[in-house]
Image (cartoon, rainbow, N blue to C red; front, side):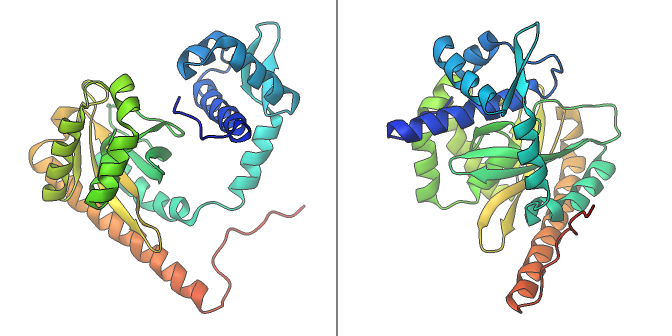
Length: 281
């Protein structure tokens, strides 16, 4: 778990939200919930401290304690927030979905949308292809320091040198502790290669055997804050096939960028922007 911002009140909020996010990710594929010990171990925080935070979140309905096992999962209030958020989906995610479906269909591999959050990146969307390979190295909600993973690497490579240096510096401790195979020197080398090639290549740096390629998305008004990526195994992401996939990915990235630009232009005319109709009862 990354360090909390200064200030006791801010630290408490940061700790609670970080644990809530972590619980959501961990419990996603565990219908019987997550134990307190598992949550404490993964967050690297004292079990007593984690228990206090989780108990408060449970009282407020954001976390549910399952009986008689005593395991935890997201509660009703978290589900309500998810529903409310779903009514106003980020235009980037909404616009990227058709491109991701096409890429998953064409490649028969797993396609991801990665979005920047400060010095980190988060997997915002995942689409499975119909091939025999299922890459499980990244799931929706997973968060890593910028530069970890092909999509995240593509975003970092698109930043200017000063911002790259800042990101590498602030993430150095986390990278050293959690990703010992990715040294600052190696990261800079891979970034340089990504800039020269025009796409990012992750050669199993995070999960051995898991290869991925990524291209950056230049979001209007926000810059290089997202990326498309395809993950598979080495044999499926080399030679001509890699070149062909990169070409298609760049085409889809351009389509997303153009659609977002067009949407912004419509909004600037004062006409209502395109939104998903609200459900009525």
